[in-house]
Length: 406
Image (cartoon, rainbow, N blue to C red; front, top):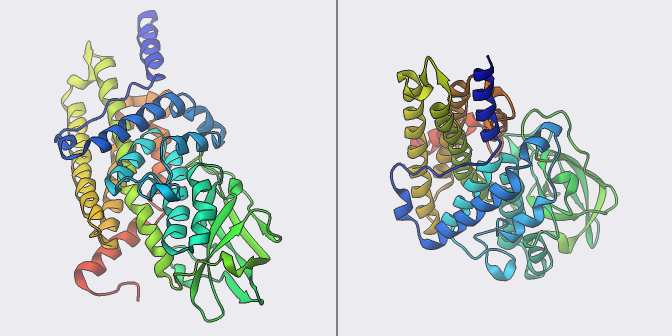
C-alpha cells in the first residue's frame, strides 16, 4: 500500500506543475511566420508563470483574477490585430488566433476576458466609432486601464438578437436608454460597455455606456459551474441618459453586433484548440506515468486508441483554424466559414476533454489536473457566441440558400 501511495503522490505532485508542451503532428509551425511563433512563445510563457499556478484556486472559489487584466494588456492580448495607434497590437489575424489559443490553454475564462475586450469592445469602437471615440477609449482599453464589456444578449433574446427590447428614445442632445442585458462577461468590473439597442425607428444602434452614468448597474451572476474564473453579470438600464456623442455613428443595423461576433467566434475557433491540447497533453503524460498491471496504461490498446483519436481531431482542428486564418488575413473569411470552425473545434475540444478524463481515471475529476475545469468551461463555450445548433443551421443556410430561421 505504501508503494502505491508513493506512486500516486509522485504523479499528483508533478501534475501541479505546468509541464505543457505544444503538439504539432502535421508540422503546421512551418506554415507560420516568425512573428506568430514569437507571439505564441511569449503568451505561453506568461500563461505558465501567471495563470497556471493560480487558476485552479480561483476556479474553485469562483473568483476572477482581475489582476491579470494588466498582464493581458502587457502581452498584447487586447486587440492584437488592431492598429498600434489605437491601442492594438498591429499584428495579423493569424497572430490573434494563436494568442487566443494559448490563453485558452490556460483557461477559457482568461481567453474570454481578452476576447471580449478586443473583439467585442475595441473592435466595434474602431470599426464603427468616430475618431474622437477611438482616441478617447481605445488606448485605455488596449492598456488595460479601462475594462470593457459587450451588451447584446437579453434575458428573453439569446439566439434571436433581432428581438431585443432594449431601446433608445431621443431626448435632445442625448438618448434615454432602457432595458437589460444578460450573461455579460466582464460586466461587474467594466468601466465601459458597448451596448446594442433599438432606436425609435427600430434600427439597431451601438452606444458606449460608461460606469457611473445614473441608472446604469451591473449585478453579478452567481452560482456558475462553468467559467468560474471569469466574472459574468447583467447590464441594467433604467432611464440612463447617454449623450449622442456616445453613439457609434457608422452603423445602424444588426450587422454591427453580428460582425463583432464573427470576430470573437474566430478567436474561439482557435481558443478551443488550446483547451483540447492541454487536456491531451495531460492525458498523454499521465498515460506514461500511471502504472497498472505492471505497465504504463499508455501501453494498452484502448488507451492508445483514445490518444490517437484525440491527436487526430486536434490536428484536423489546427488545419481548419490555420486555413481560416489565412482567409481572414486576406479579408475572405465569411461568417459562415467562421461558424463552421467555431462549432467543429469546440465540439472537438469537449470530446477530447471527456476522453482525457477517462484516461486520468478517478484523478481526472480532481483539481490536481485541469481536465474537469476545461470540460466545465467548454460547456459554456459551446453555447455562447452562437449555440452549437445555431452554427449548424448557419452552415445549412449557407450551403442550401434556404433560411431555417424564417
